[in-house]
Amino acid sequence: MEKKYFLLFFILPMFITAQNFRADSLIHIFKQETDTSKKTELLNMISDAYKTSDPVIMQKYALEALVSARKNNDKEEEAKAFQNLGTSHIILGNYDKALGNFNLSENILLSLKQEDKAVKGILAKVLGSKGIVYSEQNNYAKALENDFRAMRLYESINNRVQLAKIYNNIGVIYNSIDDGEKALNYFLKAYNIQKVIKDPALAVSCSNIGLIYLNNKDLKKAKAFFDESIIEFQKNPNKRDMGELYNNISQYYITKKDLKTAEKYLFDAVKISKDVENQFALSNTYLFLAKIYFEEGELDRSLDFVTKSLEISKELDLPEANMNGEKLLSDIFDKKGNKEQAFIHLKSYNTAKEKLSKIENAKERLKTELNFEFEKKQIEQNEKADWEKVKLIFAVLISATVLAGLFFFYRNKEREKTNLLQKQLTEFQHKALHLQMNPHFVFNCLAAISSFIMQNDKEDAIKYLAKFSKLMRLTLDFSQESAVAIDKEIEALRNYLELEQLRFNQKFDFVIDKDPLIEDDTALPSLLLQPYVENSVIHGVVPQKEKGMIKINFTQNQEFLICEIEDNGVGIETSKKLKENSVSVHKSMALEISRKRLETLEELEKKKVSLEIFELKNEKGESEGTKVLLMLPLQYIKN
Image 1: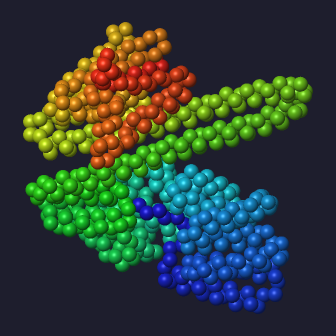
Image 2: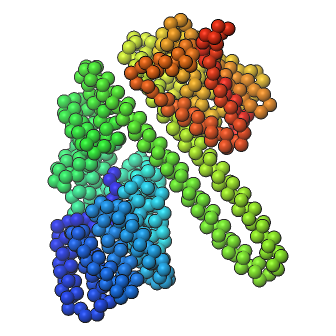
Image 3: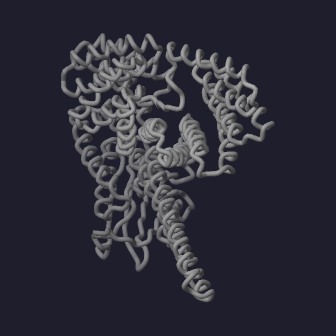
């Protein structure tokens, strides 16, 4: 879904005509006005009237208002002038200049009486405008900070029109980071106000809400909001957003297996999107049509529409649409019997999927950070309120000596809470790294299985898929926890090595030993060892001519779990030379993530984590392989 903020109005011909008429009327009044303070106010009003038709003229009148306000020392009108200048720069796409003007406006307004209703209204508008700029720059944390401040101000002066807009903007931000639950909450808040005040934007809100309910599989509510959206668009037509509504409704009918009705809505969406030149919506519409024709077995029509969709999505750089388009193309060519093209587009699909996964992981980390910042601010606000109460009570009842004692007591409390927050931040960082590890491992396995299936017979491929599915089930289990029991990790490593044995035609043997003294509930970070084992396979035993051996051994002492990974491969120096001679040198993302995970684990546990990687040599100084020695602080699974 495209971002839709309600600072700027939808530009419709009739609306622009009305705005220009209003501007002409204001200019006429301005020419007859003699009061300089009222002339300044009129200049700002004229500037605002041009925001939907001509941002350059808007700037001209805003600058005149600024000069006039400074002459009259009118701080409120000066703040409005900076607000108008900032808005004109948003329209022109000059986001840095827009922020500069909004900051100047905010600083002036904060110096005025904060209880004044007019000042609150202007300040809220400035903060909401800053929220839009930060959202366009994908700085969602800053955007929410400003939007929440604007929301509280609008609530305090009961400005329902602007509240509906700010609720929508907050919903758009949460939807942009795939937090559907919070997005739905704020879209519904906007909807409830818009319904009462008969806001023309109600149709768009209904469409957004319907799509979230559809994604949540609540078909009844989705249909109800889609129907209401159609009714509202009939009252207040808006072709651009109607095109996106038809796309959303088509997905409802596809879910209901009513492909003919879905097809009808999609062709209506195509016509509208072409009329208003909405390429984003058109890319999605073509892809939806291609999927329908694929399901109906009309492969040529499906190929035609998915090709159109990909042309647009690549031009606009839409990762999800690219991924889905490449996957459908691979499936089409596979059904047509063109295995070569099917494989080419399968590789493109895997590349697009990895790119999208990085974006999704970034969104997950952002959601975690936003939640953490919200909790942190709540704690700070509560502490501030409590501290003010304490100061008030003890100023009357307790002597200076007791107050001094309380001061030191609360300072220590603050330190403890700061340490707690720091520990929580480290935990969030550790979880974020773990989130990156899972998709990387899955994509490595998918690449391996694609290569294997293309090169081997069906019987071996079936064996490989069986082991792969078992490994994926374990990986999905691991995704729920940052640490797993040692036996689970061993099971995953054994499955992984058996897959690699099949892939490389039994090029190596392996053995995994665990000291009987190690408790069953001993834990270690999930998938932490896999990159080092992968290195032993790919860069150790596979490049050598003779059959290799990989040994993995787990022991423990009083403080540490000791993990040893040893191979009799070509060794570190030879491996480096082979990499240098290859066409492209690949830097292992998994090893880098593992290194960062070890750093955060060390900070979290406040215990030293030891990692050594060294080459094994015989008496003649010749390489006999590589050994990885990892010492982790003992930890156990919590029931």
